[in-house]
Image 1 (cartoon, rainbow, N blue to C red):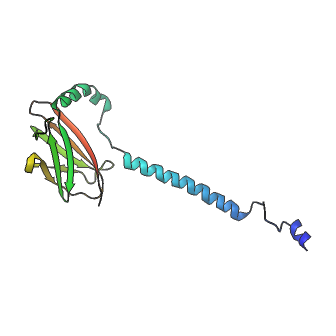
Image 2 (image 1 turned 90 degrees about the vertical axis):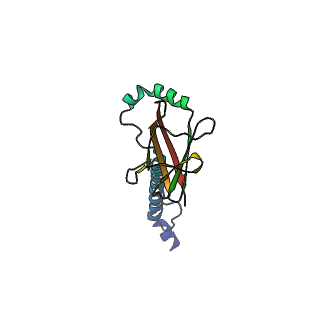
Length: 163
């Protein structure tokens, strides 16, 4: 009887069965899907978004604008507490700076649904403050303006909020 079972393939040792094929497919496709999800998450979480509408046109005056902005010596930092965004804008000596014009747009790097145009007011210690509606995640503050000497100022500050 045992000779007959072995002759008919009763022993499954070393044979490719339906369960083994299923396991190979599940592990293989699981690995592919896992890698794709990881790569998609990395692409979305690190995508900075579009900076300019025409890279070529913007590049024609880039060096001039960069040198003028570097001469200003301004440093900017952002802090968000609750529903209040605080922008600290100082010169190289640490004194507060108030540009002649300053536009601020708070955005998500990957979409425009939560964009907010900010209206800054002077706060204590020379900071600029604006009310915001923010949630957890990655944000970008796009600053564009003009210094009192006429130099163009552009600065993007990317930051993350965690609950």
